[in-house]
Length: 276
Image 1 (cartoon, rainbow, N blue to C red):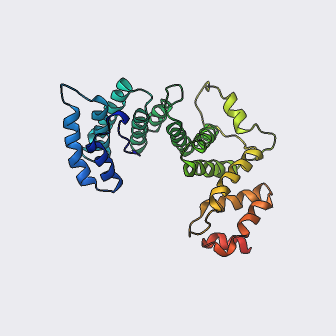
Image 2: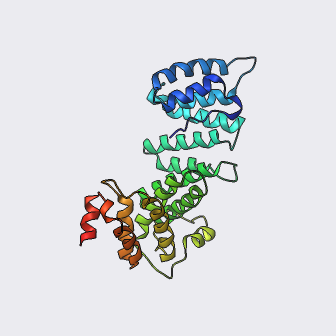
Image 3: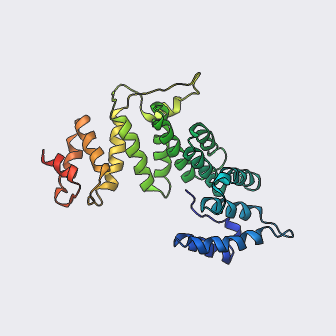
């Protein structure tokens, strides 16, 4: 999940080269260079704690240490960033990486707790907050706790729409819509109202909630704004979701917008639906 973001104030030639090697997929040379950067960061006369934590995080993610030690290493990096630069992009990124490790270790509750530490109150960037809410929504959805899952996915969509990650915002809209189409009630509160009125639960449990058609409209239009730029490709779940929504809420204009591009569509499932 790492974005290889070097400490802004310490972009030495080596750190820039390290990022370049990673972006090119040259992991072997990047790891060799990381050892030199790590050694330089530990210079006792001018120790660079942030760069040390950044490189140690990257090395853990790149497989430079024993798998059994990865969790402890990522926790160390989180603690170090929290100490030297709390709320920074690297601090938020380290929390995302640690949460991902917890999730991959089937420790979903620990992942949720870790993701909750990424917040505007802590000063983290909007894009990282959005990504953390997306991951939280996915985890909650995977365990069947759909009401908070929908809230997190909606918050993620809003955050990422206002950042430089519009494609990720569309992913949020798709995952939210996939849940929302199962239960629709025009009298139910909108997602913005649910988020505003959300309170800590008195006891744990799995919860569901109907979606409001207004929110379905907003999510579909966001998906379409991206999907219609290019409708090619043999696996277009985004367009399939829009067709499902068009039928479910009886809004023909969404289907019509896709039908106008029928000659460009390559997904055989969509072609079959459009011909029916």
